Amino acid sequence: MSQIAVRLTEGELRRLDSLVQEGRFSTRAEAVRAGIRALTATARQERIAAAYAAAYGRAPLSGEEIEMLDAAAALAGELEA
Image 1 (cartoon, rainbow, N blue to C red):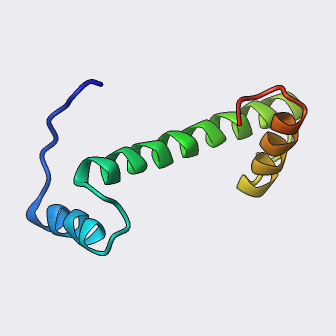
Image 2 (image 1 turned 90 degrees about the horizontal axis):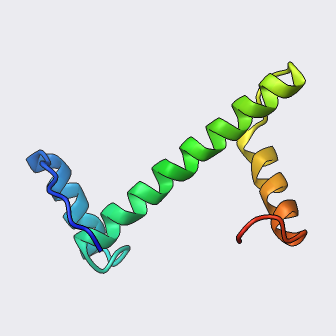
């Protein structure tokens, strides 16, 4: 596993520590990794929506529509779950 250095404001660090103290995450690192997963999932959904919009020439799919398509594809064995 690689390691990076991140600078946080005092407020950001307090909020991060608060999440750990509340038991939502066991460590700061776990909380940061969860945040990165959430950001990358959102970016992936935005790319998928843009691709559908370009292909079909209509408004991008909603997050719920993308989740349904992901679930259907996973059930069909086309994506990793």
